[in-house]
Length: 245
Image (tube, rainbow, N blue to C red; front, side):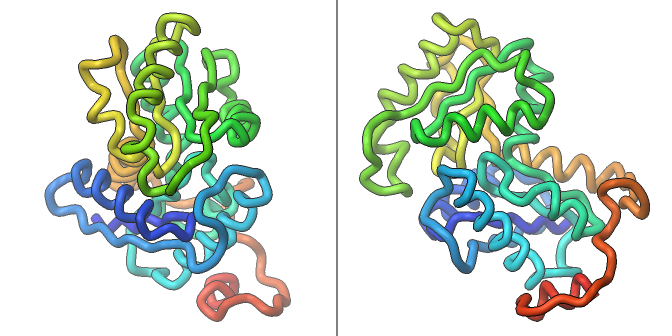
């Protein structure tokens, strides 16, 4: 299996965190290729930033077209995910949908631990888009300014653990989802400290992507996820224009 993992943020430090967790999660024999958004923002917090990140992910993935059997969109909120599922004829998996799927297999209600207050509304919308609002116990987030996006876990480990415990004991969460690529790998360090299962988006996405590749379900030739129709276009990067032609 060949899996391409794209970080829709421009932060290489975050890509390194994603890669470390992905390599701990992949099966023996799975080949992993990493890519970082060629433009955009350091980390995505808003709907507009997600719009930019989705397009950047499409551009990055297009550069590797034909070189992967599955694609992982490695940012919580799954920027551009639905469009990418149309564009590529291999499984495309987002961190959010994968983490939600894992959480739903482990418990009835889940809480999301996030890195920014600004991100909360968008995350709730993502849960709603996946049809799981009734199973969302809460979204809790850091309120403090971030010193550096690559050091969030180091800088705020105690508060992140506290929020997870509060989500269990005050909000009734059966499962904790640690959200966002900057928190990749945190679930491993929280195991044993939190009295319910803890889910990581990167490891969930990698494992779900491997499962879908192995299932060989085929690709959409009709329906809403069929490839975009051919039509005149202008100003697109050459790799992306070639995919659309």
